[in-house]
Amino acid sequence: MFITKDDYLPQIKQNNLESMIQANPAILTSAEAMALDTLKSYLFDRYDTAKIFAATGTERNMHLVQCGVNLVLHLIYQRLPNHRIAPHVEAAYNETINFLERVADGKNGLDLPRRTNPKTGESQQTFRWGSEKKRSLI
Image 1 (cartoon, rainbow, N blue to C red):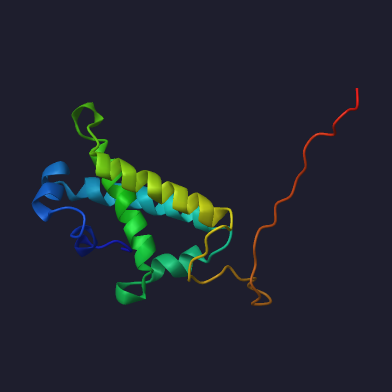
Image 2 (image 1 turned 30 degrees about the vertical axis):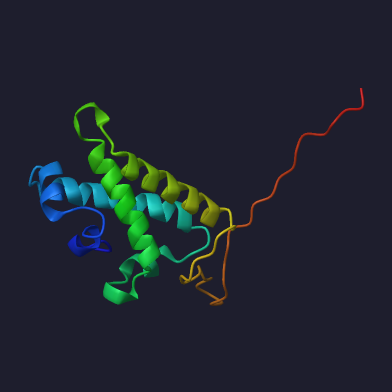
């Protein structure tokens, strides 16, 4: 898995995490899968997500690991009665989403493998364009 149990230690104590998932590892596994899908949805246009999330240990981008942990903790906090999400968890989640939106828009870059064309090996990116409706002078 891209996110390991040790990755949670800077942000939450192990016994608190165990308490929140009620000692059910399936809850954590499910939340991690959802978080990784969220990360991929923001990165897939520009980056090779297969390579990125296949990385292990020190080969992983630690900023993405932190983003993943923020997303997982937010998902787990949502399970609590009355959705009592701690303010610092909510702030970390919002900061993560804002960062990922900037990455998706090309305003922030990450040192990650770029998507490449399998035939040419050249960097590949989805190109989007559009325009506003024509203005009328009347």
